[in-house]
Image (tube, rainbow over all chains, first blue to last red; front, top):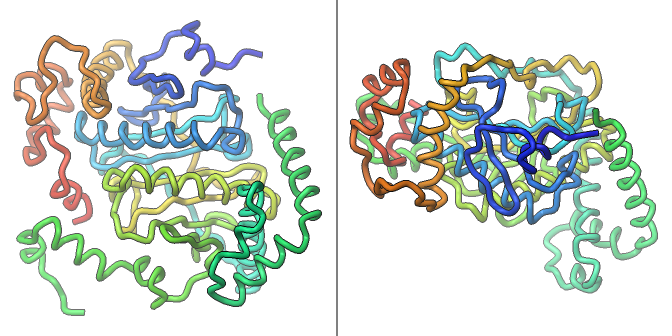
Length: 193
Length: 213
């Protein structure tokens, strides 16, 4: 199946192109949310955020920032939104990761407000713990060549100690985690339109 | 804290305004530990906490430790770092909270819906039929003519930002000649320009500070 953004990258279809380099392309949205809606995408086809390399991401966001500034400067907008729809359930339409930059004005009549959901203290604590533990664990795969390094880090508090213990004592647990992530990525790929 | 009058704010320099913002910033107080929060990630440059008014369970706010009001004022290296962490948090939300997708959302300026004056990245876990409609963008038609005009106007500044000089006319390092600007914007924007005479050409802190008045 063809990807509309890849077609723009390959110049098979036209777009109001604002910027292009070896990694990134930025163009005006065909159907803009407001006057001054720019789409920035990595040139390499990647369906979701998690499949974009850190190097490409860096370029994408640096470009996004420059374009946001350029919108302030050129059309004198009063604000900008940066919105990413990561996955179909998050509202993603094209099967190619992209960032929206949207120029805003006080009177543009466009609202991006959500109604806050009420969660109990217990629910919040559970979520806090789950995310905290997972985010602490993920440090390990980022430094696979230096397994000793975490030990050398200053141990600031008890929670940190625990996290480090987790990652060093249970290296086997990391492998199924990785598999899970793989599966998730593959699942996400299939979900793309 | 003593009430600060509008007049006093008007007289303040951008630096003073930033200092004032910092003093009154709830997120700076969260970072310093004066105000309690549910921290899910922290390093030298940033902090991720749970939003107390979540759009969905697991809504995370990722904030730089140094007070900056909006993204254009951030250093590029800090932006890169923040988004690297944002990618990790998004993956974590999907893995541990069974989210089926994530929205990453930033508001720069009150006109964009920004409430606190501390720059932040919202990370919202999403599930099918979760009832969130705010992230759905409207799709408006734009004429080819308007699109071309807009492209020309914006591209000039984008090129300037990237240091691209491809036009014969000298790309300005300071202010554009008013005539040049006027010929390239449509009638609506002309009106806007008249109202907003202060920021000319250069993007400055003073202008940004005004976005929060």
